Length: 87
Image 1 (cartoon, rainbow, N blue to C red):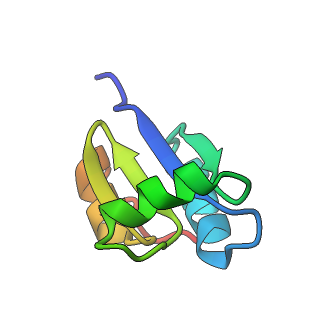
Image 2: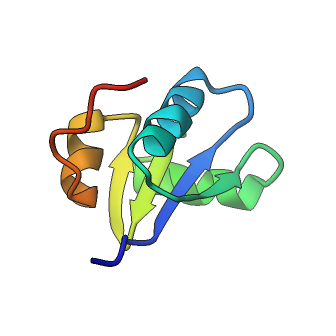
């Protein structure tokens, strides 16, 4: 089974992004991290996905958008139920 393409829009100073990074690694999920801190265009794009509010991390899993580090939603989207505990 092929892993879906995962993009995590994040900032270097975001504690939820750091927790998400560890959780993804623990669950064997590779993702492309995109730092939005230096790009106004990227920040606006991510805010548009969340009703105008900028929130990190924001995940794009092959078009499915998940705002914030929500283990249950990520596990479901990645089909990794049962491996959701680690931070």
